[in-house]
Image 1 (spheres, rainbow, N blue to C red):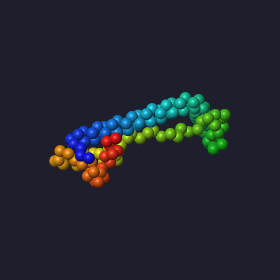
Image 2: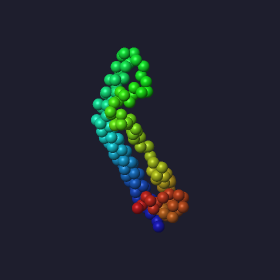
Image 3: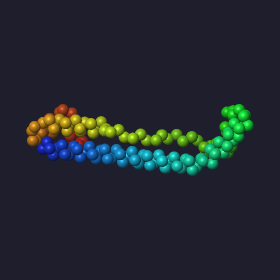
Length: 135
């Protein structure tokens, strides 16, 4: 099948834009979920951590050694509900995914081509995933 080169470039640029927008949306959603979990953890464990900090600070002020056995005692009955927050903040998305880089490379090839039309077969033979892009 032959396809107009300029129309294909337009389709590819639109596909790259959609991909980047979707990746940014997923990142922003992950950040929101992370921040909600962080806030819930803080609200749930704040009092226990404050009690722990107060108890340990008192030992430091009295110049007493803090032993391993002091930690569960300092946390008292809250020990089981005060686990450490272990989620990590989502990492910002990369500037361009591998798929987008392939599309950008195809655009570069198409920009160097002088033909008005190009065959999808020849592009796929060169390794460009047109079926995935054009769906």
